[in-house]
Length: 566
DNA sequence: CGGTTTTGACCCGCGC
DNA sequence: GCGCGGGTCAAAACCG
Image 1 (cartoon, rainbow, N blue to C red):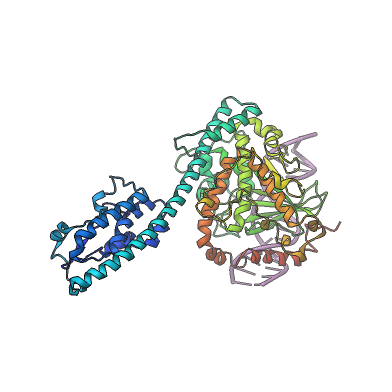
Image 2 (image 1 turned 120 degrees about the vertical axis):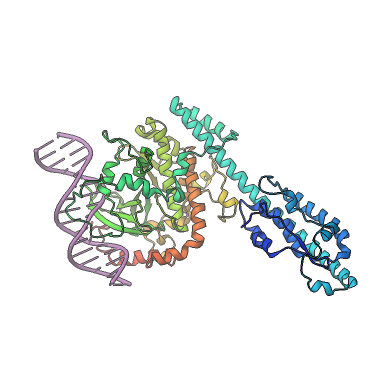
């Protein structure tokens, strides 16, 4: 498609003086509706539409040429003004987009085009018709202008939000670099956060962390992390007893060895080289090892997070009589995300779900929230741990930032083999709703919402529906859950989210979440069918997904190891 | 029949 | 070196 480039409008004139926009123009941006939905090419398309649309509707007799030419010029200039068109000289010649009007055009092009029906029109009839057409044009032009105005406002808003987010990211990256050199004290961090938020930076730096996060960026993860996590040294044989039998179509990742190979503290591991020769970031390996643990009350064997999981193992840990189940994401082949599900030893109504890794595939909307949140929490954890060893070694570092509102909401475990954030959603926080938007909470403009990708501008990444269908199904509600009605859970979730988002380090993570949400939404619009087909059993929608799991799990619930006979 | 779950065995890191 | 514990594999069973 010619995006309003050097292709001239190329108005042609028939012998009657009527001129048409040739169909070749229309394919580029003839339909107004097409323009409205355009994004980055909005201005370009509008600029060409301003002319083409106008001229497309215009069919004027020769006698009116002079009169209408002035009108047209005014109208076009108005449109251009309204749209505040900025036509880069490099790609658009202004004169190409200007409506060629007047008799000079007539003389220039006269006789070049074949006669049309308009030839038969008498001047008088032509005149009247032209007037009505002009009136129609003007009214339509007005509505178009109005719509374009709205669209432009939307674009501007989205751009503003995007810029604000980007600036903040840049500021945070700079701040992070500074803190690497001179680890500031806590209050200094807070001050700098405030300053960073207000900083205005013109530079466009995209932090790598931002790029690394989110499904879009993760799409190539298999080629990276798979070399890191799955790639056994070329000559090393599978030391396991059996050859691969399952997953024949997939290069079976050796998660055991990968896990071990990726130990961040492995002393002898030199940074691996990607095929391209780029040194692989150890951060990525650590990133995959960061864990987000979610504690939620649920009678269900598994909380509903919108993803498809396949159980690949079960183990009874020493400290907990309840067996721990191991699940792997099956929404895409080779997705590195795993989760562990285990009931709390103290309170078996509490389900502890620990997520690890980031999805390398688009997510359905229902899965987006949890994935974004876990990814964000992991990123936050890692950004804290990355910026200084203190973050990793001192469990209070992140705890301080995450727990300004509730000490029971989130905890950081440094004693665990891997850095782990635990979001405790089992405790109802009375003031959770008030904490949802604390005055000092960093709020990221939500480009998705601004641009209309997401309907409600929710600060919370965790819609309540992800925490088990039981929350909405009274029949499945246990006494535990009835003690925690959905609304309060919503508050708790919101409060947890508020606690997380209060951390400025969360920014990069949230950016990832946003990008994944946007990308996922973009995907989701066209992905549903794909999800259905590829996930055959699971998903006409999420409820079906739940039912699939629940039916099985319910059937086996009595014998479910998640509920061992006490 | 294909996908999922179960379950015993294996691997590896770590502590002693 | 050995045992323990966590994590994973994969054949068999199960399910729709």
